Amino acid sequence: RAKDIGGPRVEVFAAHMHADVVRRLELAADLQRALLEDQFAIEYQPMVDLATSRVTAVEALVRWWRDGAFVPPERFLGPAEDTGLIVPLGEWILRRACREVAAWRASSWDIGLSLNLSARQIMAPRFVETVESALAESGLPPSALTLEVIEEMLVEDAEETLTRLSELRELGVRLAIDDFGTGYASLALLRQLPVDMIKVDPSFVSGLGADETLTLLTRTIVRLGHDLGLIVVAEGIERPEQLDLLREMGCTRGQGFLVARPMDARGIDELMPAGLHSAV
Ligand code: C2E
Ligand code: MG
Ligand code: MG
Ligand code: MG
Image 1 (tube, helix red, strand yellow):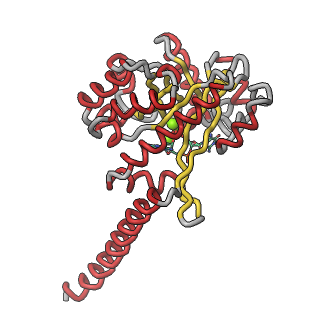
Image 2 (cartoon, rainbow, N blue to C red; image 1 turned 90 degrees about the horizontal axis):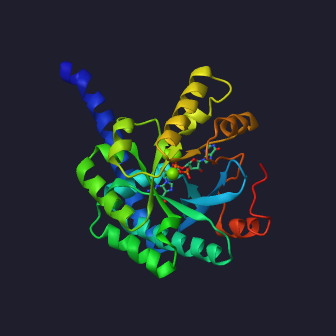
Image 3 (cartoon, rainbow, N blue to C red; image 1 turned 30 degrees about the vertical axis):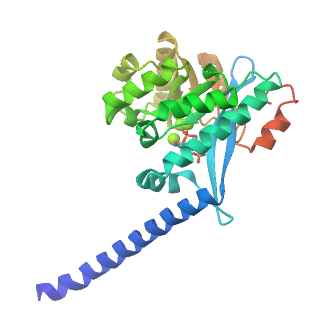
């Protein structure tokens, strides 16, 4: 009888598992095909210097139009990482973004490029050489490239990751900790890692002005960053009062829908003659 009761449950569970496995396999196959068929695109989200409102950098964000339908990065980056496809995809993003930003710089626009890295990408053989070659091929100066990593990546395989990141920094590339404040061991890591920038996670920025604790924490992170000589970028700025508070705190840079949405390369082209200043 126990079997009678347990049986169907197991079946339901198995069917669910099966659907999940099929979906993952389909996604992996589609990702592979998407790479061959050039279905990926890059959007760039401007970052402004909060003191001058000048656009000082853009962050490259991958976009996938899966047979015409938009798939958000958080849906496909995990599977791309699991299957290893993140390595060729990441290299495509790296080379293309370096070329596009180098072209904007060639028209006398002093902007930098921020790129997100995944753990698997950093650990791929010859990753440092790939970055070096993307820089050489595009003519982008190493100091104009910032590589964004998240705290978790520095905790897993910490030693090897830190070695790779140090090699990258020796090229003259800058390093940023993305989603700062949401991971663990951040403070110890700031001492170990030759990092240039921290990006304050939107979960802090969202509470600015509305939540006393989050406002205090943001202020503390901004001060900590400055005391360590780092560029502090606030992410996810959506409301004017957040921007005002960040300016008052002396936060270096801002990024968010209020400042500018991610846009394709043509959108950035159009932004350029407009005085290179954000509206905010
Ligand atoms: P992230 O690096 O923290 O990027 C910021 C994300 O916040 C982007 O989402 C951006 O569109 C979104 N965002 C910017 N301003 C605002 C705002 O004011 N409000 C809100 N609600 N959201 C805002 P996106 O493009 O969906 O990317 C999500 C994450 O996927 C990124 O987080 C990054 O971790 C990862 N990712 C994106 N592109 C790449 C890539 O080329 N390679 C790798 N390895 N990861 C990437
Ligand atoms: Mg990022
Ligand atoms: Mg972030
Ligand atoms: Mg994120």
